[in-house]
Length: 193
Image (tube, rainbow, N blue to C red; front, side, top):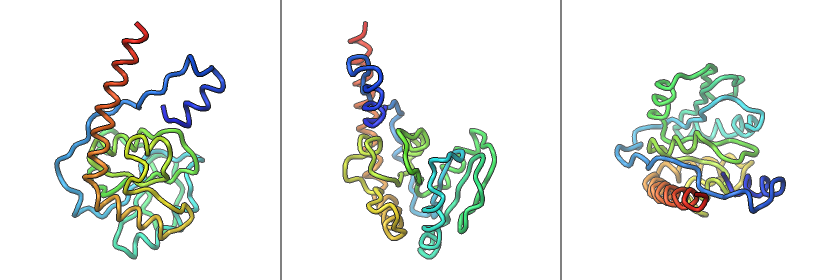
């Protein structure tokens, strides 16, 4: 779980009963390149925690810079400046969309962890979002793709550019996280035997 989720769970269940361990993930795909891709992708079903206002605000900056803002998943409303694919996505469609993306955006007002972020990294696609405990535990405290000012379209564009240009840095950090996660889970399982 994320550090934020751990803190809240510990309040309710006591810190002795809750273990903070990395979210399991496969080592990222280091092959291939995202250089020719220009899709900025928000992937997964709509949830109220998604920030539609910031998505609408950043669309123009992204498009002007040559990016293709795309959102795909069930329940999404129309968002000005975004190509919206509003339907359930099969596994093959999910993978196809990931393969088309240069970066995956996490435009959440608040979240504990993101399975889509992990799946993007596993597929070799960098992520862009707030520097939450979840993302910094995977990518480091100063990762390329961290959005410095949430309400600034310029900050979002800078984070998209940084993540796409430093793809290998994100993926190396994610490889280290996947190794550390496997080691910590092994140790946790052994300690509870």
